[in-house]
Image (cartoon, rainbow, N blue to C red; front, side, top):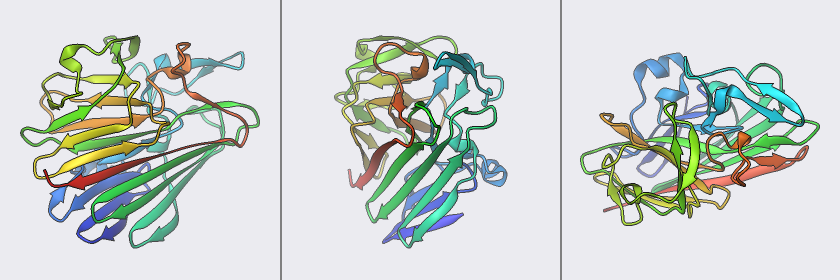
Length: 287
């Protein structure tokens, strides 16, 4: 584990656990949900505060897709779930390539072998901590000798105090089937609209919003958090599970199952040695 500090802010990284963030705090205030102790012991990113999604975000239907005239099949990586989820970065150890008191860079290299992804790539996360903000820069480079699909995303879990709120604007939303797979894009229903803000849990969501403007505001009790994402993150996955003490607001570059999508909201197609980059800043202020 690796701890960064800036003023009263601290950030604990777990490179060995999928390059995850174990915790981010401002003094005694937790800005991400507390990591599950068992997940920490087992180096499982899913039980921590935030993890990267590379080389794709969310689901790929039935863990298969066509590419360059071939049928690609992936390992199902989420228990008995019928789809593959979140790429492979969250399931691999990352290497610390640079570190400073308030910053660090983690890297991951995949050679394209094995059942998780047939295309070689290199990935990087760069963390910059200040007393009132955390910036995460993501980068993926295609090292496959031919064009390959690629996407980026972050999967933060936020604490859910009483009255937690969320505000953002988007052009449309993807409806889902019984397996939470996005199947149809349409206007945002009034009950799901967050342009003026909503209490988290007013509606149960596990949906991807398209045409996101890159800005969101979270009310987390004693603090307000503003999310500012670069233009490449044109989609926002929102997860508000009933009865849980957390919720997720996930900037992503594409909608779920985008690799099987012909709607124009698909994954990026990178030429050999081409890079896809993006940044997300989480900024803290008083309510």
